[in-house]
Length: 388
Image (cartoon, helix red, strand yellow):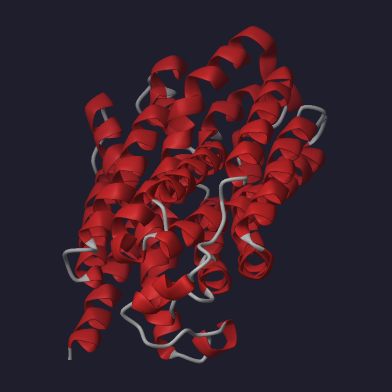
């Protein structure tokens, strides 16, 4: 195995992940779409929730496909779907077409592309699982930062419709380029160096009790981050009375800490007990969600709490692929993680659903804080079982 082969794999993984990671830039589109469609924030933001849900749901299929036909083809399909879905969103004149183009087609594109870089990188670097997974998914978290200024500039100059067309073309070209570097190693002996001796198939994984514990922890870990990310800019405007330009900097803050969290927490799993890492992430998420829920916000607390939540949210997205690999092997990692990733999709709907039922965002924050505390308790319980 040549070093330059490994480096090109990482290059392709980063390029793909950065482009599809722009799904986290959604809060920049809320206000322009509200003005264009004449709809409320709660109606428009559902597009983001649908996209994330479909994104997660699609990983079941894409994970299986990339195990069978290779990551290059599957990621290429993802590029066409994501770029094409965003381009088609430019022509949406009502919520339904927006939900279909951005939510379903675009979300499916992210789902097809997402698993490929993670699983491919793990197979090339089996002895650096934490660091490499952190770099791969860290690029996903960094995408919204890299493209934030491009998106804002396009919105200011050309409006929402033309912005969707231009960024859709950019994402399409770059994802297709990055996908061509995603190939599995010819010699898969690396797969056998995992801590686990067994390589579970999906049906075997689903029969284990550990799967449902891990799935629950993943769901609880993602719920707070997804809720805050989808409404980040709007929280600043509505609750801190920031001007829209200042509040939009939340996208930058979230992207930086989201990406950093993926690398930092994932790297720690190479040195510490992996469930100790999860325990700390739940602890910090509970504390930062508590700030949003119970303390009157000012500019500092607003960005401080968003930073902490994004840091831990990124960690959950980086650590659980590693947990899935350690428990169930890498041979079928694409398919197995595709199923495990449904926890993320459910979490994407959980926050908005609670907010829709309750009708008060601060109460929703309180509930999210409580769910994070439950995750803290369950992690502690599961860790004790694993240690005994």
